[in-house]
Amino acid sequence: MIIAFMTLIMTKRMPVLTALILVPIGFALLGGFGPTDIGPMMLDGVKAIAPTAAMLMFAILFFGIMIDVGLFDPVVKLVVRAVHGDPLRIVVGTAVLALVVSLDGDGATTYLVVTAAMLPLYTRLGMNPLMLACVIMMAGGVMNILPWGGPTARAAAALKVDAGELFVPMIPAIVVGSAWVIFVAWLFGRRERQRLGVLDPQALGEIHAVTVDETESDATSGIRRPKLFWVNVLLTAALMTGLLLGVLPLSVLFMIACALALTINYPTLKQQRDRIEHHAGNVLSVVSVILAAGILTGILSGTKMVDAMANSVVSLVPDAFGPYLAIITGVLSLPFTFFISNDAFYYGVVPVLSQAAAAYGISAAEIGRASLIGQPVHLLSPLVPSTYLLVALVGVELGDHQRFTLKWTIVTAFILLAIGLATASIPLAGGVR
Image (tube, rainbow, N blue to C red; front, side, top):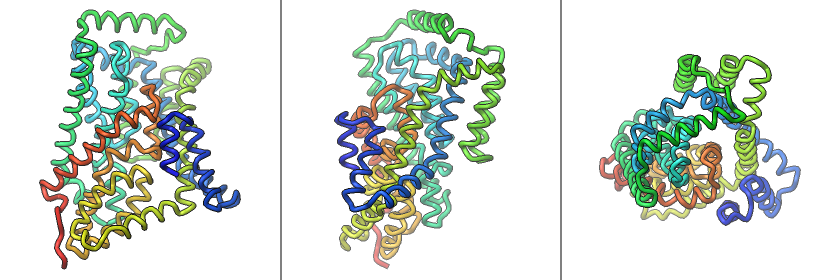
C-alpha cells in the first residue's frame, strides 16, 4: 500500500490529497475489510490527527499575520546585508537559522519561521526552492533528537528510561550532524553561486526596496504595523515560551495567540476577515492534506498492517545477528519511521527489539539511542503532517521534495549512526549474558 502510494505521488499520477484517501481505502477493500470495518478505522485516524491539524491551521494564521505586520522584515533586511547577494551565504544562513530555530523542538514552527525569513531571498535571486526545503528539513531531522522533541520522549517512555540518558550521549552525533547540514548547505550554495553568480549587494537592496514598495501599493497595503513591532515580538516570545514549557496543548496555544494577534493588530471586523481570507488558501491546502493523512494512518493501524510489518521484520532477524541488534535497530529506523508513524515504531517495534537485545548485553538506553537514527528520513514521510506544511510554504511538490532530499537525509542518518558507534553511545556489538 505504501509503495503504491509513493509511486503515484512521486510520478505525479495522483495528487497527494486524493492518494491519501483512495489508496488506503482500495487496499483495505482488497484485504477483505468492508465499509463497516473501514469507517471506524478512518474516523479514528482523523480523530487522532485532528489536534495536529488544528495546531497547524492556527499556526499558519498566526505566523501569516506576523509576516503581514512586518515582524520578520528586520530579519530579512539583516540577512540581505549579511549575504551580500551571495547564494552560498544565503543557503548556509538558512542552515544556521534552521538549526537555531529547531531548538524549540517543533518542526512546524521551524518551517514557518525560516521560510518567512529566507524564502523572499530565494525568490528574488531565482534560487532553487528545493534546496531551501531540503536544508530546513535536514536541520530539523538532526535537532529532532532533542529530549523535548517527540521521538526521544516516545523512546524514553516506551523503554522506561530517562530521556537524558538517551540524549546526552548523542550530543556528539548531533554536533557532527549539524556540521554536516551546514556543509551540505555550502555545497548547495556553491552550486547556485556558479549558476547565478553573486548579485551586487546594492542591487539586491534595490530589489528588496522595490518588492516592499510593490507590496505596500497593492491590495495588501496598510497591513504593516511598525508601531506594534515590540508588542508582536513579546506576543511571539510568549508563545514560544509557552510551547517550550508545555503550559497548554500546542493547538490551544496557537488558537489563543492567533486570536490575540488579530485583535491587537487588526481590531475591526473587516480587517480580521480580510486577513483570514488572505491566508485561507494556505490553511486549506495544508489542513485538508493532514486530515486526509488520518485516513491512511487509521487504516494502517486498524487493519493491523503496522503490527504485521513490525512482527515480520523482527522475525526475519537471524539469531546470529543478535549481538548487532543496536546497529540493526539504527538501520531499521530509517524505513520503519518512514513507512509507519513514530508512535507505532517506538511503542510497537522498539520494545520488541530491546527485549531481544537484552539477551546480548545491550541495554534499553542503547537501543533507544539507535532507534533515533532514522529521524532525518522520518521527516520526509507522508505520515508527517508538518511535511505538507513545508512543501506548501516553499511552493514545491511533495514528490519533487522527496526525490531531491531523500539521499541527503539517508546520508545524514548514517553519519549520526557512525558517530554514535565511534563514541560508543551505540554499541558495535553486544556479548551474550
